[in-house]
Image 1 (tube, helix red, strand yellow):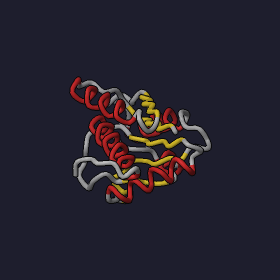
Image 2 (cartoon, helix red, strand yellow):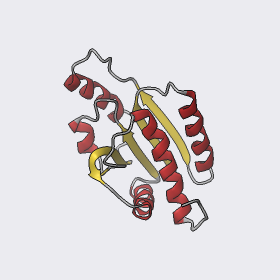
Image 3 (cartoon, rainbow, N blue to C red):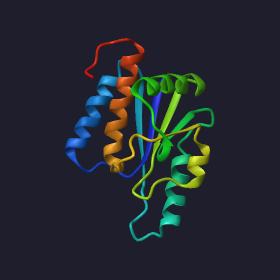
Image 4 (tube, helix red, strand yellow):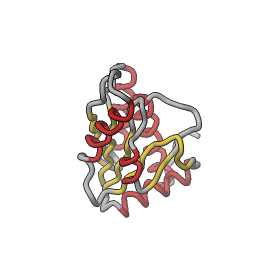
Length: 154
């Protein structure tokens, strides 16, 4: 199984990089994790053009058979147990490859959302796209713990 996270922009804060590294290490027991950072558009780029550019770069990094979930404020909210089932189903339907897409500060293009098999809303609150990487890695780790009936803090 392979988890691929495709996201716009780079992580700049060391504490976030450290947290991401920790959850990648924890997840290595269950799946390989690849994080692909695509260039985000400069702030001076008009939003529609930025979304199009970032979206094209993201879509270029997705295999046609992969199961794709976009993180989107307009997506479905789930409990941890529901999320666990969706993660495992995603791996099954995607030929053992699950792709999570995290947009940049402007969000995701319509084309990217159209490619998605599912849309997930982590919370009605807004998180930075950098923090979202750490949060989603923790949630995928929790999904594996739930699936395997392993103890994890609640």
